[in-house]
Image (cartoon, rainbow, N blue to C red):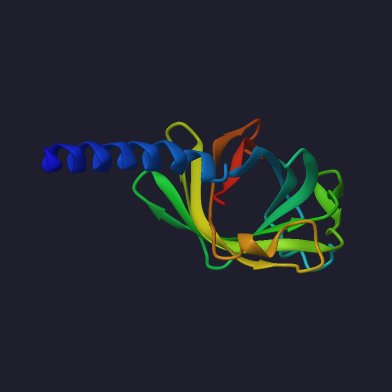
Length: 170
């Protein structure tokens, strides 16, 4: 009899713990992201020559500027590009004229490094990385530092526009 009671109590305890776990877990910080290729990339006469792509990301109901800069040259592997890059999220969005970014953002909110792949076949792109730094005076909580980041989407237009979803696990 005692054995049955112990088993029932153990099962009930496990059920309660399993049901409570999802309630305590925070949802990822997630939102739509879009980006435009910076035709001024590499041109030292432009203000944002180090930025390859920039656009907007919506996180927590607010819109921020987001940019990417390469950490190494892209590698063509099979039917895909593989890149190592840094994403940077700013408190304001970017300004551009004729495809060239004219304002590189003001206050940096956070950044992280990632590895990304873009398929030549379907132009789908995906990246995984982590948050490496969070501005303690910025709009994001420092608890995000060290969290995993992910984005995915499709390159469209004349291969100069990207849209997808950006996520940071909490």
